[in-house]
Length: 405
Image 1 (tube, helix red, strand yellow):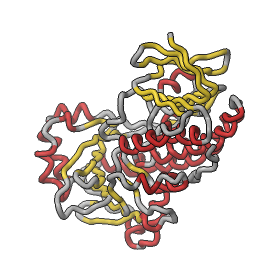
Image 2 (cartoon, rainbow, N blue to C red; image 1 turned 135 degrees about the vertical axis):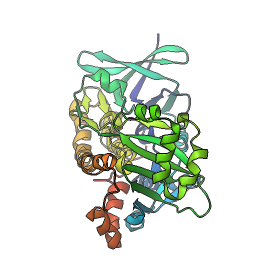
Image 3 (cartoon, one colour; image 1 turned 45 degrees about the vertical axis):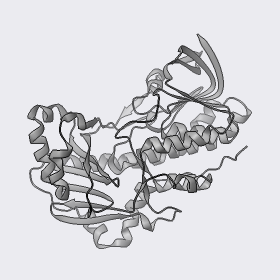
Image 4 (cartoon, rainbow, N blue to C red; image 1 turned 180 degrees about the vertical axis):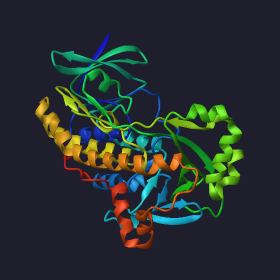
């Protein structure tokens, strides 16, 4: 079996893993990132680049080049309840360089960041390489066993960072206790075409017992259709025609496009919603970040934001230690101490929203009355900066503190 060594091994080439890898490599740390796929091309991944992430790119001097890539600006968020429209979020009120969410295919974001990281001689990206197990030396994690294009490989590292998502293999192998907060719904991702005259932005639609979120993407709408937990098999059993009719009831101006856009269930992708978090994010030699540490609900689309904030915090805290040697468990615990409060606040908000608003809505037969808070934000535009800040910046946004070497 081939064996290689690195100072810091990051498992998972998603937004958290790639951002952390870039920052550590920029700071002079020897970094290896594993990505199990041969490329970053996956449909229906989170394609939101939040104002907080754009601010980080600005701090790194990368923003101007990044904004040369094709993207769509989302400056406002609204919701349609029945036939009434309410505006509830205004990103233009944020105190940031970019006062919008950039909608961009995640593969473009990851290609951009990995391309910049590869310019550092101490950065290594291993595609088609999947971590299968942890290497333990006593109580300490000393790397991973993985499979790659050439077969099995052993990768030894002073620190291993698990950034391999909500289905994290490393988290499962670590033995770290996981707390499940529950989720009463799942999401069906699908696309509807954009036509001239369509509004541009982020729109939620509520009608009857249905909830649809539409995200403007220039040439198509990326849509999230909310269903009861585990309900996709029942929907498929009822047949495509009934599903399309339900979509048309809630899609509003896009209703006439449903039949042509959804020709079979292969064009509908299931996201099984999970909300959980580790009680401890680390053990000696292993640090979990992003969804590997805390899977978020899709409410607000903030999972990517929190994952990238974790990556920045981890690099700020652990980078200087890695330049000197191997981090102690006490060093790793500082990452959780920094990021656990924002995670708990956002998850508490999401759980309250899903249990008090989403679950009753998808069980209802009638269109609900607009909640008071929706009417409040709509009637008082100055307040629309509050939900925009929660979604766009989060709680305790991070900034780049680790210096370039």
